[in-house]
Length: 54
Image: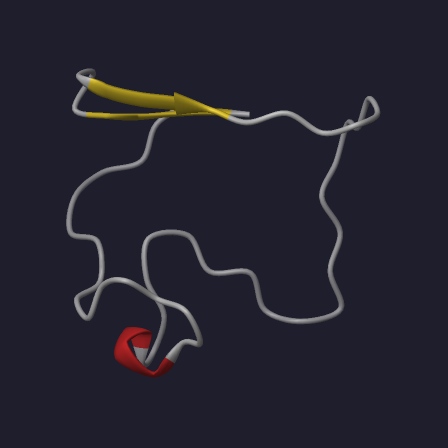
């Protein structure tokens, strides 16, 4: 998985095996959550504001 912010800051992560999808029985938030400041281990208190693209 590679994530890029404004085309400048880019980070890449890897899994131990090949995966083609992400599944979860819980909510999966991208860019924020209803109460970001209350998320365990969250280094931020504000949600993401902007656009997401492939």
